[in-house]
Image 1 (tube, one colour):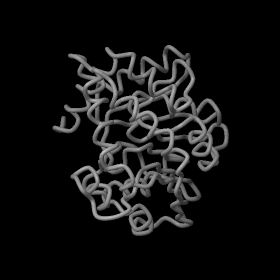
Image 2 (cartoon, rainbow, N blue to C red; image 1 turned 180 degrees about the vertical axis):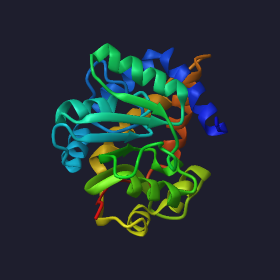
Image 3 (tube, helix red, strand yellow; image 1 turned 135 degrees about the horizontal axis):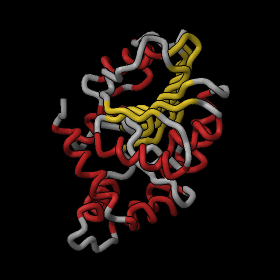
Image 4 (cartoon, one colour; image 1 turned 90 degrees about the vertical axis):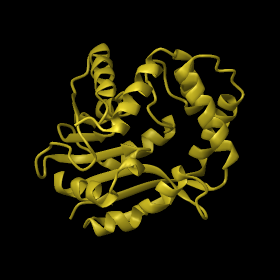
Length: 250
């Protein structure tokens, strides 16, 4: 079933494909190499840390949940030798991720699915990564239960996200406040739960948003969205902290 949010992201990803300047700005500030599109805001150094935390051996299966255009998951799979599955609720994102894998000569299984309905079998993946997207799960407890269901014993889940420092000022931050990563992971039955702050990632974000806010987007919808998010992010800067959450399935 196509949800309203999936339709929104279908349009967002379609617009991104027509606006290479957004990718150029994001890659420059996040330190990403040419050809690796960013769906979210993880830096190149952050991607290395996420890859290490997954502890994937060659031939194991990685799920990139909310994979977007697929770049981060494809890079992790390339570094670890893991088999990759990517799930996203946007059909347009899945089309773009599949095209990227073909362009890079990589094998991956990209499919449309939801946070709480991935379509994967019990205990079928060895590691799960979700980059800057788990806050969109509604309700969050169903998504965390799904992560636990499909992960093998001893498998790792690695999430990047934000947490509020105080009272949320907008719906965007209220959604993050409701998430409570450590509590949700523990409630779903995970062990070794850790949530650590990564201010260096946030420093790269700030420089990127400053450039985005200074743009004159004209009638380019992707640039307009990028500009508006930059303005909003800077207006509420300091109300969020950047975090990396990890946990192990018992």
